[in-house]
Length: 561
Image (cartoon, rainbow, N blue to C red; front, side, top):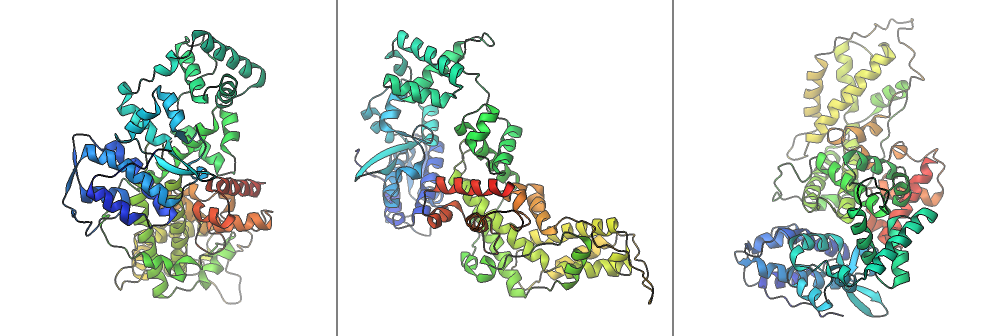
């Protein structure tokens, strides 16, 4: 077991001392930020201590250790000490193998990386001082080891490609052995239809080499084959484009696993997972997080997220027929000012959190843990905004009926439904901009926006004469649940992936059992409480995060029937 690397710079030593007491989830986020920071550090650069602390923790400190925040740290020292910091924090987090995924798919061991690069274990340890970030994990029975996440390995290979001696792995393998690998791989594919991951694993076990060494032989062989000559073992597919990534994400939202999707599209489960995560990152950026200008130094009081009105009471559902919708609008009562402001301020806190987290996402290998934290916060924001919209529906209807001169249900049903749908969109656009600060109530901007919008309505209500049926029959006229529609309106129409379509109307009638119901209610906030992230689901279910994710997917799939 390699010894923990020493830290030589005061600012990083101070961070190691102060951060080690944080919870496991927080420490893992720090580790992911460190792995995201390192690729941007240049050996001949210099970096302010304040910058380093902000990039690792996400917060700007007021003071730090003896050296203060004005100290400049050489890039070479930063690279050497960030790996040591990562090891200290992973020790404090008590990471186990399940926390870093599957070997070969999500992380490398020292031996696996040494064979991949054709170098010795000592060389791998030297590379840790050059910025190769390692995490220390508990291997069981009191044994500990270091592992290297794929994202950390990827950037290191790009920067130091000329020094890794990657061809050495092939030079130690005879031509006869490489030919046998190709021959056996073709037989497995032809007779058993295995994918590359399974073929490499099987051949590696038979010849006593790692699956990565076998994979490299097969990739090199297929790259040297002429296109279309039929000699390639596997049809090398290009990386999935945006449309394909989103298509895979849609299937995941129906509860399908990566392996099932991969079998259909001819990709490995790992490739599908990576493509889905890229789609999730792209949609988060489309929503504006991490790319729009925002003052990340603005102070937000996160204590508001602990308020009962923010964490619970998120139960509003819309009617699905026109008569029921109009009755709901007439009966809706405005919330007390305190509830409105608390929920609006909570949205501001969650927005800031999403922006900070989005800036740490790697373009090609975004962290699934960070993606989940962002998406959970975004789901919470939508549920809060639905409640805020609900408080303004009575005002909205009153303004419309004053403009048209009578009850809206005297209009043709299709026209009434169209007006209400557009009006709810106007209210939602105001709610998106409402921050809850100051003494201003939500009703003021909603009233102004509705007055402007209604001024363009040319509709006139049918007069209601006493003793005569002046209203049209609207019972049974189907309309969209407006609360469900908010998911598709969110962030300019880019928020629809946050809630599987089958779940938007609630769980009644879906035929899920009691356990699945509880899983879905907690995960997506369908029981009136705030939504839970996978880390919380993992703790509640008493199972590793990856297994908890599979349980959620299974519940979603069964909800689809």
